[in-house]
Image (cartoon, rainbow, N blue to C red):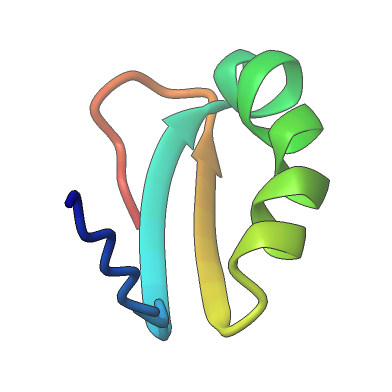
Length: 56
């Protein structure tokens, strides 16, 4: 008989992402509501830059 085991794993902590402005606007920001609904205990440190290779 197959046995199914479900482990609840919580995701907690801080996530830092540095992206360009158009990537943030067009890709990342629209996904944030679903991300935070799924992972409410993660804080996001988002760095957005228009200059290539520049991070904060």
